[in-house]
Image (cartoon, rainbow, N blue to C red; front, top):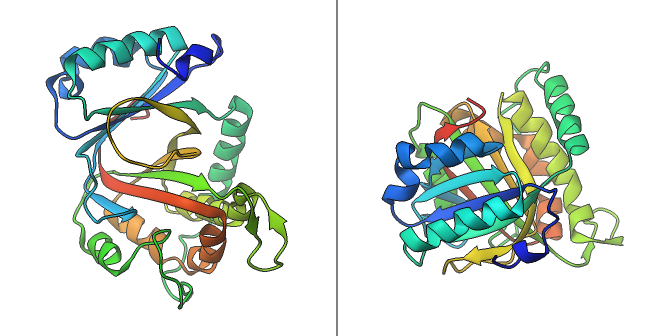
Length: 267
């Protein structure tokens, strides 16, 4: 069994986030994957087309797959199978899901927010003097604004928080996660009103196998948007832009990957 699965609680499910450079026969073949999908608690697959936040416009992988398996033994067997069939570059990240209580709370919040009108496009602004990689740069924004996708879109957010950060309004020292929270709450409020839904949320526990160069993430969130236009409206929302300073202050690094949602256990 691979670390960190060696110390995983036997009664806790395991999320496996898979970054693949190519459409391998094992991962992309529905027949070959049907047995695993049938035993997974949740799963989804998507093409990785753009990076809204990160080191480049084009992701350093082509496809994304996710499965939540019942326990670490099942997850370990599946990872071992993939190591035999997949290229060495295929990277698998282990993650633990948020608690059922938190999941129910987010669902209730989303249900309430969907009753409100769609958020506005006008107004708001990003910090004018900011340069860095925690919000989309001009090229990434242009790519998102011009992408064409009629069907559902996956937005995968990977975050690493600062150990300590200053609240941008008060200057109070807090954990990076706490400083980031106002931005997260505004994000949840905004995409809920755009009829987007959370596919999965959890804490990253480390890389199991693969060669993809990326930070050691803390949090993972996968959200399904109904269309590319909903993603654009999310990014253009003035309420979200006004909270960008909390994102910048709280995060050490981040990737946001966007692409067509191919299939999902959520339908």
